[in-house]
Length: 229
Image: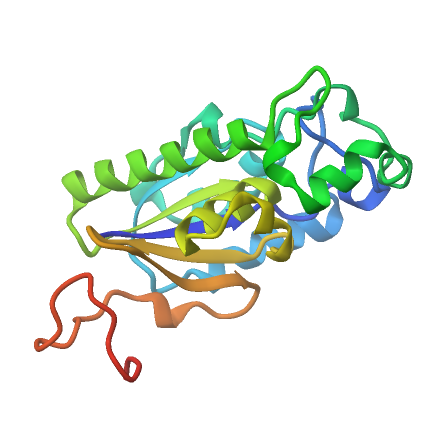
């Protein structure tokens, strides 16, 4: 099956200010974030990307813009609202240091599956919509570009953590144990039997993700006992 590269957007003005951006309009990359987005082009060089999808939010679209400019074969990134940030409702735009004093904060930290943001959505709903989105896109990429294709989705921290938790078979209550930095790349390969987490929050070189043959003696989708070579 194809390999999904989940890119978290570069550092944003909201990250720098310490506020919860959510779906706030006009949140853009800061200077560091723009440098990170430009650097993503080199980090992904040599990897044959078949398709790109992005959250509709500006900080994600800005993150993939340099890559799209350097990869004319991608033409444009498809936009999927299901990959948008969690809808934090009344928490949106508020400073994190204030939110940390709210009773709901501890639920978000310790019992995420019970967390529902006032005026927004639950973390369960976030998990369901984002996992459905990446699995549907993965099947579409496989059908159109083959089982060895690589494709990219640019999205948000909590989205990536929810998708990784699903791939690892973790309960959503454990997803806060996962950390993904701005403009990091997390790679997941889905197979008929199980997903494989190939990278988590990688901020370095990614050449090792280029397609390669599975050892002939190992059935497709099985783990290599003893580790890969």
